[in-house]
Length: 442
Ligand code: PLP
Image 1 (cartoon, rainbow, N blue to C red):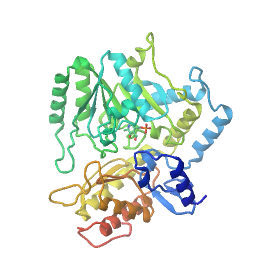
Image 2 (image 1 turned 60 degrees about the vertical axis):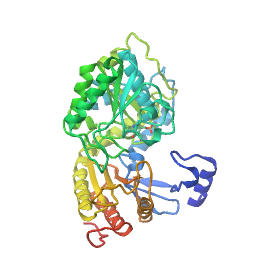
Image 3 (image 1 turned 90 degrees about the horizontal axis):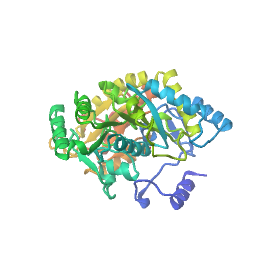
Image 4 (image 1 turned 90 degrees about the vertical axis):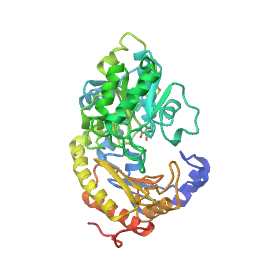
């Protein structure tokens, strides 16, 4: 089928997520390899967002494909009350790479279900009901996870009772950051006012993803760990996006040597070759269920195909030294982001950790008014996205932000090629450039 035919047929019979159906403009994709994908007509795109921040090892890795094929032939599915070798081996492997004594895992189909189960576990273990979460967060699209979310995606939903939203230390491009001490004092006060004995868990993204790559100020995560210990609250780190090398460590919490009580994961776990999520538990939390019911389940829990895909994916991270690579390429990307900020007055802020990066655009360098309103878009942001696409760059453009989250296997030349397109886009599409148009790689 041609791109046109695929798009027309898909729009007729399928729903596109988080979108007005009349406004979607999908790209039809026929194949992908490494850091690129292409349309049926052969137009190539550089994937600067690892699709949905998930294809961390890159596209079309034959080692993972062969593992999936072999598992499909041996055993595609069994009931989760039975057990397969990939399930057993994956639990062991994750225990080896997860922080601290997180060494027991419950497998789900994806990230939202991992967070749903993490919140349930925190409630069972503490006998308390409330879950604290941040504004400027995303935790998934299912009923509980969207209630825990702190961004406009939850505005259309009636919220699950018992969620307490608290302010993140970042207050947007115009206001900037609280210090760790101020942010922690505020959290302590909220906990005391809510009643610590009512709060089961604190669910947070250690580095916030779609709400703007918010890297916590030094001491902040350790401070949250201390508050959770002080008040007997289960600390749940949502590493669904920040895990598996994205930040230059296996998990983002490793940057600050913090061990949460529960760690949720998905995306990079299989690099999205097959859907899989997991809830990692510290030993004492897992032990709670030795003589108490673990009252949750899923038909596809511990799916053998997904567990085999995850095992093969984890081997690729190790064989190709992708965590180290994310650190090295992350350093290159930091320089390229700084160049953009230097050259374009429309760049209000850049942030990155490993290969997890964002650019915040402003209408006016002095007032720092964002180039699109919170939760909305603008003609400029639409034009920028159109330029990226026309010039073969695929990335995530949201509100006044765009993201730079390429696969961890990206080469330096590819990284520079992507930034050259961005540089030209900012010069050509937006006014206010400080220098003349430059489109070649530096
Ligand atoms: N948590 C975070 C931090 C995420 O980024 C996402 C997805 O983007 C989720 C949870 C939800 O994961 P899924 O879409 O696999 O349900």
